[in-house]
Each structure stands twice: as C-alpha cells, then as structure tokens.
Length: 425
Image (cartoon, rainbow, N blue to C red; front, side, top):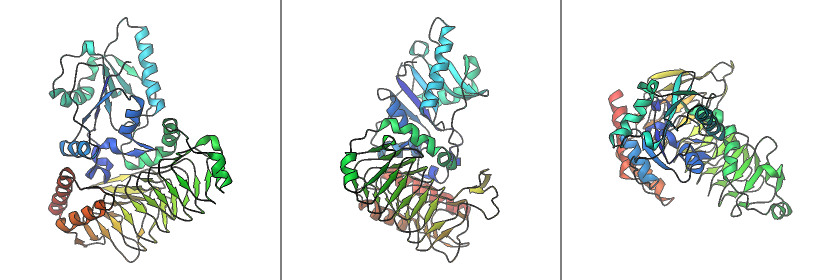
C-alpha cells in the first residue's frame, strides 16, 4: 500500500474512554512512549492525517497541538479506527494481507480489513476514489461499518484495541517495546557509569544526551526497554525498571521507585512508588505514595501520601463506573482513572477501580468512593460542587506555571462537562 493520507476517526464507543474522553480525542491516549496519533505520524511521516471525531474535541485537539485542519484529496487513503493500537505488528498484518490480495488481483483495489467479520480499517486507492468532498469525512467512517460488504474483505490477525483506558494500561508493556524503535540513544554510557549510574542490559536502554541522571540511579532493562527522553532529570537513589518511558522535561524525585510497564509523559514530576501506570503529561505525583495500574490525565496533582488500591482483598474482578454504565473490567488489578485538572489532598486513599472526573478537589478521611463526579469538592457522597468560574481560574493559574494557556476550545469543553454534571443533579 502506498498510503498518502490517513482518515483517523473516533468510534461510537469513545465515551468508554471516560474520564479521558471528557477533554481529549481518542487518538490522544498515551500507550507506550507515544500517543496513538504520534505513532501513526512516526510510521508514516510523509502522510497527511485527517482527524474525524466530536467537533468540539477535534477543534480543541487541533488548537492544542497547533495542527491545521486537513481536507480530503484524491489520494491513496487509509481509513482507520482510532481505537486500534497502531504498532508494528498491526502495520505488518495489514500490509502482508494486502500484498497477498494483490497477487490475486491485477490492479490495486479498494479493500476492507476485518477481524472475525468486524471491519476495522479500509484502503481506497486514489484511482477508485471519487472526487472527495468535506462530506466524506463524515461518510467514510460510516461507510466502513454500514457498506463495507460492497468491497473485497481481507481477514487479518487480531489487533490490539483500546476501547477502555485499562486496555492502554494492559498493552503499555508491548507498546513501549514497539516504540523503542522510534528513539535514539545519544548519551555517553561510559561517562554515566563512571559517574555512578548503574545501567543493566544496556542494549535495551536509550537515553537522550540532554538528560541529567544523578549518581546511584539504577536503570534496569532486564525485563524490557527503558526510554529516557530529552531534558529529563533523575535524582539520586531512584530505581527504574523496564519496560518504562519517561518523557521530556520530566523530573524524577529522590528515591523514586518506577516499576515496569510504566509510561510517564512530558513535563511531569514523579516520586514514591509507581507500577504499570500511565501519566499522560503535565501531571504531578511527586511525593511518597503508591500509584498502581492507574491512568492519570493532564494537569493532575496527587498530594503527598496519596495511595491507590489496585487489588481487592477477595482477588475478584474489578468493576468500574463510566458515567451511568458499570463495566466489569475482567481484571483483578485496576487502580485510579483520573480526569484532567483534578487534585487529591495529602494522605488521600483511592479504592480499587476508582473513576474521578475533571476539575475535582478531593479530600476525605479514609477511602474516597469509587465514583467521583467532575467538579467534586471533597469527593465524598453528597459533596459540594466546585464552581465553574473558580475551577477555570485555578486551571489557568496552574497552566501558566508551565507557560501554557487555557485555550477557548478547552474552556468550551470544561463548560460542557459542567452542564452535564449540573443536569445530573
């Protein structure tokens, strides 16, 4: 396939990514070292990506990442569900299947890729694409599910799918392994080792030369790769086990323990104990306390001594409440799913499978409830509501400290969530 453009679209199940989906598009989910759309950009650096999703969310995404809206053109186009994890295995699967298809067909033809009779992607060569219009941004995703049977069907191997945030946590280990190929090691390992840094299984470690790593730090890639990006600071007596990714400008505090399958995005501060968790970016968990099998969105602040429980005493499956839907995760490990701009007080305790919405101020004696709505003030049952004007003011203050501004598109989404919460009461 000669892919010139990619139409990346949100599925009808995007709300299952709650609370991430409140302010973000599905393709912004971080799984491994990169967000989903970044993986596609890396794989196809010359291709144009056209984003189709909820209008307000797409506008916010384009504004935050300073992307210009892309129009459809008469190009070889791949139509792709953003819930798919676009790893090397997936690309190989569809490319190999298409090559085999072409051996039996004299010309390139439009096809639908499917798994167990369910369409997941489609490829349309430009010679079979009728002059596209803006309407086709709406039509082509719909076409994939409602009219796919008019095109040849190609079966592919089972793809990895991220329908829920815990799918990203589950696939994080293999995703870090896959993203390892997109990074270069520019650090002087001999110099690091002479300074007192311990590097175990060096061939699976990539460190940017701008990273500052103190003596007594241990980086152990025995169980998987470790990627340390630009301008990262790692303070003394910290231990990092792979698979692990630490994003640019993140600070790892003294004595931090980061266990495998963990991704920490750019501009974060981390401390204490962290295991199999994903921190999106611009969030702080810099004090002692345990974060396990959890997903923190952006601009989250976890107070000193905050702990997450990620395993029931009964070792039973954990159920999670997403808005009005209770979902059985079919997993025995599940911690906290925390929305943007939410903050926990010191010594806060989160029980297994807790969901917290956006813009919350969470304080409690003992465990908080496992369902905490957006704009919760305290987070306990019958708690007060954080006023929208004050929540926006706080968000602006926090973001300005990192030289970021709360954009009008983001404010509109926060206001939209406030209306939803107000109407539920």
